[in-house]
Image 1: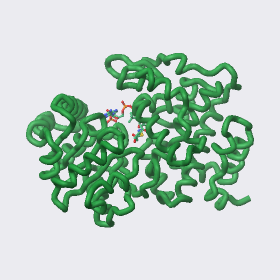
Image 2: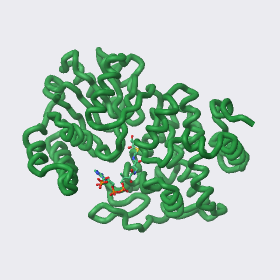
Image 3: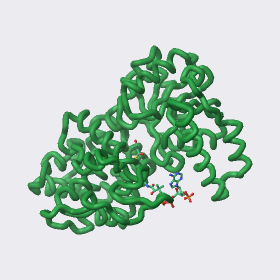
Image 4: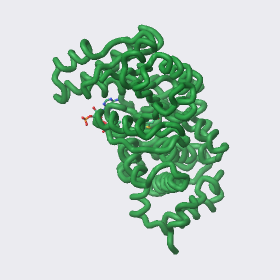
Length: 393
Ligand code: 3HC
């Protein structure tokens, strides 16, 4: 199969690497030759990692790069040849619509057109083409070569055959696919929003520090605390998703971005990719462990929270958001559990976690937090209607 990848940044390169690993030919496109060359370097170092671990033969990796990875300088040539095109360009609706218009005018009718958008509407992107039924969301997670999930997103006009093609293609990349409706943030970016936003609220309120939250969350079985995760994904990317959800949900306070994120982005401290975010990073990538104050600092006023309370409020808010999402028909509870475990590496899915805690305990704890008098607590922790409906007292 020939896979066209539009955008050779972190996600595009990761997706291209996966397609090469699955034995496909890959056409890689970006704005200019230099951007494509940077993408090639990313793919080469990704394959090198596999070779170093003995998961791929060095000759095979070399051959994949030389024989199966080709530069595509124009969208028309890429679209004319590819069986599947995955767009992984910047999160800008106008840009994505321009790309899809170009793909639509050059691609044969059978080509599967996919977008890796994080938080834009698949339906709106698809509506720039004459074939919205053939456009699907294929949402990968960072780092794409590692995270086992793809959200296959059904735009309003995406056909059942296109969904099936998206599911089969995802399976062929060795990923687990879940399906969801084209609703803001899909599953993971919405349900897991409290993972970072509640953490930021606690720092903003002076209840905890960046380091204390990361260490509490990691001790509870999550591979990365919220601040290390934001540094990995990019604080700009995280902020863009938070902003999109805040707008999509009529500026609901629970989705309001934190001024701390805005300040870091304005200062160009975007996380690992710029060497500095909530933490500082050395040339070889890993966190030095040294937090960047004042972004890392705790505000002066709040009562410090215990580790268990830090984790509890993040988990409760995630469970609550998961109930809101299923109440709105975004996905099934089973797919939400799979998505959070594979797309965000959580130790439990939100419904599994709710079952472990007991729904009555969850509802009572949320009600306690909602009545705490903290900023926006009433909206942040109001029990989701679908959860009220299921808890028995
Ligand atoms: N590229 C390729 N492979 C990588 C990698 C990268 N950038 N980073 C780590 N890996 C590999 C390592 O080589 C290692 O492989 P191995 O198990 O075969 O030896 C494996 O991943 C584990 O890595 P490490 O042992 O170095 O470190 P960790 O155990 O801490 O794992 C992690 C790193 C996989 C990133 C893990 O911390 C994790 O799962 N974190 C959560 C990530 C997450 O939640 N991602 C989703 C973000 S949201 C998103 O992307 C949506 C978007 O729309 C915003």
